[in-house]
Image (cartoon, rainbow, N blue to C red; front, side, top):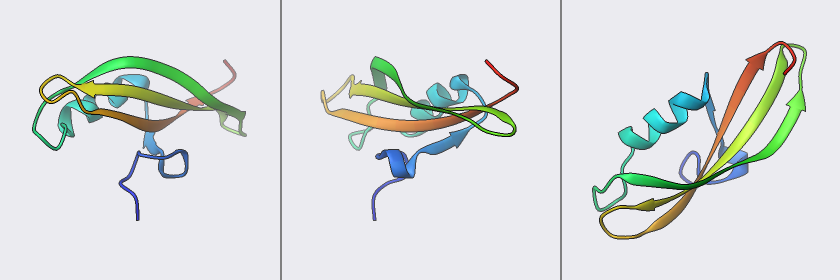
Length: 81
């Protein structure tokens, strides 16, 4: 069983991209260090009855120990983009 957000299949549902960064602050590295964003990529987009559903992949690194990680988030936008 993988940690939520560590794979596309386990992407974390968010209401806005801003919440993605808040989640990173609330879930620091195992060493306790803060995550720093290296790259944010749109990896999937689909149209739903409610609007657009976007999946972001955030590549991050720990400011203390240097560990790298990827987290996946899904944001549902109402209406077309």
